Image (cartoon, rainbow, N blue to C red; front, top):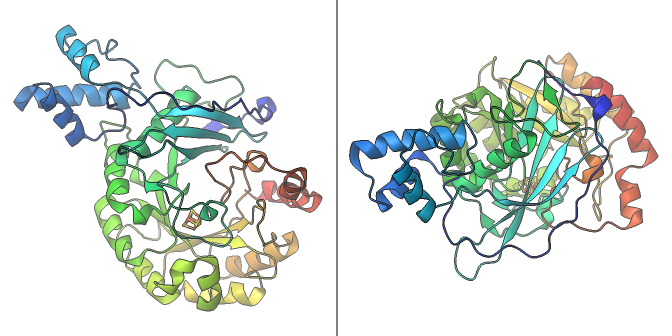
Length: 419
Ligand code: SF4
């Protein structure tokens, strides 16, 4: 099983971010493209029919199973075709402008992606890798910014800029595997989490980064097809979780088409409060959202829907709230993740006291639900839930202190034992 080598965990490393984006790409990259797009790329250089099918399979294997960075290394592809591919395309990844490594082993990459159309600017997105004792989870983004303005979420303070393409979503996984040394024959970076069973470093994917995945459903579904492909990146649908704040009309469809696990950002048990915390609730209130969960095609007692519940002091953390939560989830194969609130500069909420989180958790547990308290990860690099924001902001000393007050450090230690 993979293990987290905390003894060798590195301190925070913040390489200076480059300030100027590189020049606009002269050629398109094939990294992140689906099978149909690769076929179209081959057709554009004159490869069609049966040969195209065979060449797509070869490219697919080199890009997604071996992490190829050049066409030259594709030894089973003819020299002539390698040259033709190199003249028309690249295997470039999004540029990593900063990599931060938390004291707990969490890694955050700030990536720069090129404009999708003339006149658009370069954008920055964030991807976070969270190693634990039995898995390496990659939290990926689906949009630049977000439209949904959830009041506890730092990302929600950044306006939606644009949807990520399917290729840009998949490319985050490629970049993470590059940086973790997660391709055959590669060595991991010094101090990194190392699976002792020789398995992959990225074992799980969660769509919990920037953006609402179901507001970019076509591209997210397209990316999932590449991520789940048994000849490609080979992620099991049981190890991929799509998290939504409740875009009800898309929930059943994405479950039927992809079969991935579902997580719901619930955070409140009354519509009046959820309207404030997750404003999308005004459109799709709690009862409608839970109905969609009851009929989610990929849920069962063995594959429970995760309900995310951020613990906000004096806001949603009473024992009555916990009892109401249990009643609401009746009949749904569910587990509940209690998330201690991660403060960010300017946020108006505080994290619930540890004793109150325990009281809440007990009610949920006694009702028969698993209710792990999720250990906050990567706080020192602003990589924890709700803290992603693409601009690397310079924090004032006061804000830095708010991120790790003594009380939080105590809670952090206590919660570390729970996870
Ligand atoms: S919690 Fe998710 S959906 Fe809500 S604002 Fe943040 S990124 Fe957007």
